[in-house]
Length: 284
Ligand code: HMG
Ligand code: MG
Image (cartoon, rainbow, N blue to C red; front, side, top):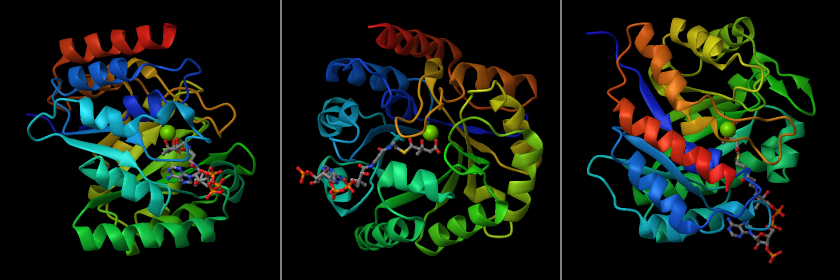
């Protein structure tokens, strides 16, 4: 039996947040319910951000209320501030994620805050999560490139990873937000980041804009990472990152990992069906 790799499904959140068409809540619920049967242990289903900033995610509470929760699956939500955290708790999210940037340009565009300001906000969320026993994941965006500031220095990523670790994030997901990373840059970034957090507590989150997501996954596998975020149907992008295309497709990642002898435990047929459903949602 090969090494286990976990795919963290982020399609219902990172996938759908960028869609121009307002997707009916019932369609989102149907997608999550199908994904719940595919064997994922974690599915990101909502973000409790400002609806003025990301209207597509405004119905996060309704999505969480409407899904059929599968045993052993953790339903996750992004929380940008205390208001978002309180909404996530009220909606009974199983875990939350705070999301910072390694670059100032994207931090400003995505959170209307400097990195330092955003980390101060997240510290309040982290303290509340700790007090409530709520599991908290962390994201760092723009780990190799920023759409505003250009290439990102590994040191800048490491600093934010260290801050999220200090706040109690159980895992930090490293985002190539605009999919411009190259394997050698991912490798150099990881070399430095691994000084802050061991591979068991890191995840790779590669967007596939330039078709290099799978090569970047390979670079991260070689550094010992065994958790990767992906979106069924390759949906996605970030509305505040010009040029950000979809996440690496779950189907493609699963096949890629299997070809390399890794075991994800996913049900391929269900994942494929969810991928088709996600694509249809995009098409409207
Ligand atoms: P702001 O405009 O500076 O803050 O936004 P504000 O406090 O002035 O809030 C603006 C309005 O939103 C106010 O309403 C607030 O009440 C309301 P008004 O008074 O004008 O009527 N508001 C909220 N409403 C509901 N829930 C909330 C909330 N917060 C404020 N939680 C803010 C600052 C952080 C809110 C904003 O910048 C924001 O929501 N940003 C999130 C953007 C986002 O969701 N981006 C995509 C997710 S990140 C991503 O995709 C990257 C990732 O995939 C990894 C990778 O690929 O790299 C994770
Ligand atoms: Mg993303």
